[in-house]
Length: 279
Image (cartoon, rainbow, N blue to C red; front, side):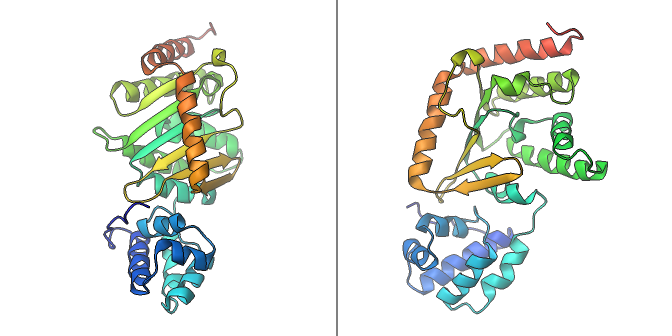
């Protein structure tokens, strides 16, 4: 298991809780695996809590207080660490994403959130929430654009995305919105801030026809998988599952167009969308 990453406890509530958890565990003379057994979770889950890549839930906070003789410290403080500007089902994944050193993703139906434009993101949120006030959409779009700061040039994050052609062909918002969105994806790739590949329809059947995959790697913490559905999201850290889906992403990249050929296709599609008449 990777060695624990030293955190600045003042950087965030979760970093503070993670640092305190590591200190309390070591004071008890327990390994991450041993503490995980007491909570019926994996040792890697404890490592992710200590590294701040996972959010501590109230039920685990109470169990940790009991196992580590910390009174009600974790129960009291996990509430502050749980506050987020993101939708509940995505909050933990978004916070983990911000600490990742590498993100590899297959996007079957939507452009990846980190590569979306404000207009494209607004169109997606409006489709999800047809009766929401504009102010709510403003907040969601702002939060999504703040996530994209991870790709500011120069970026320390390695982002490698495979985008299905279906995500590029579905008109989201309008043809003008799509033209701008695809131009933006291509620009990020040209500026070497992300590796972008397109999985074309002609590739046929592939290794992830049942849904999206996001794999996040961290310095000093185990990797995480994120699976997303309609209004739901799930993080997984099982090593066997992580290894399987890492291979799946490798197969998808092998089936997709090369980054250079993907850029050519993106440029052609953006130009097509910019025309009034559909080609």
